[in-house]
Image (cartoon, rainbow, N blue to C red):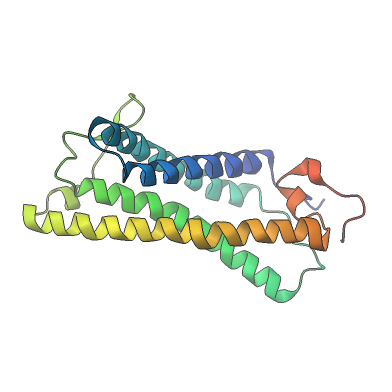
Amino acid sequence: MTRTRYSTAAIVLHWLIAGLLVWTVWMGWQAGDLKGAEKIAAVQLHKPLGITIMLLTLLRIALRFIYPAPPMGEHLKPWEVKLAKTVYGLFYAVLLILPLTGWATVSASALIKQYPIDMFGLFNWPVLAPLYDLPAELRHVTHEQLETVHGLVAKLIVYVLTPLHVLAALKHQFLDKDNELAKMIPFLARKDAAA
């Protein structure tokens, strides 16, 4: 039998990752405007949230092998299928690259011992030793470069991938009137949708 929607696990992970991503990016940008203890608190929460997104994304990718995505509608044009697959692939890549660059950034920080990646009071996430062990001058330069890359990747997901994803979902729901969006939000299924 052909799947008509994503698995429950995939749906839960999709919305959980989306919510955490919004919160984490918002906190990261807020931290830029904060000072002192408020800034430290925001950054200290931003870090474990990013690691959590990375772990949940790895779980989501693993589950894709167990529960494949439902097929795309036959009514979709080849360019739409190609664009959708490209955006999905980029999303998965960025959802891994963003926390990895954050992890690398803090691993190269001179303050990592004072402010470790505290995983919600349960344990400290390890540093990336090759970055932590760099000589002080090189470590500082590397930290600055990684911080820049981390910010650029955040902008890619906020200003490019997320709007493309949301606009495509809205197009399917309101212009095409098909059931593509219902694959991730089952209660939106239309009986009169395009096949």
